[in-house]
Length: 158
Image (spheres, rainbow, N blue to C red):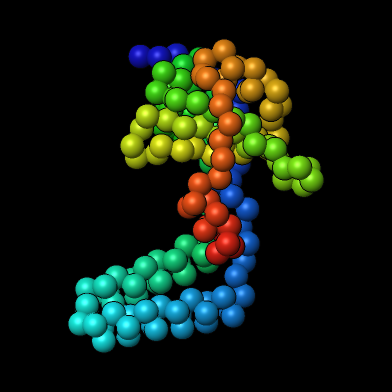
């Protein structure tokens, strides 16, 4: 069993919560109902239900505050809560910094895990240089670009 003594510990949220106003929810509802009606007109009732369920799930997700995660840098990887993400299963990493300096730095990690192939770990309240140096000893550094999913999530206000 790997050693689980923490080298560094900190807490953070995956993303900043941007409260949505009522107009955002109205727009989501109008788009969802229009999509469901269009699918029903083409006799694709399963798609119509899927659109409505997806809109409800998106609205519920938008209303929630993101959970506070506990991160621990350990000898063999990074623990997020009680889950160990081992260095040996990481493909590459990159430190993402806000040019304007208003947001804390984050570390982007690509892994071999098919359930969580891309991890974003906020580095708020911890020395990012120590984490960078430790990752550099164990994982290859590579440039990470925003994925299409990241861009859509940012456009939707997540």
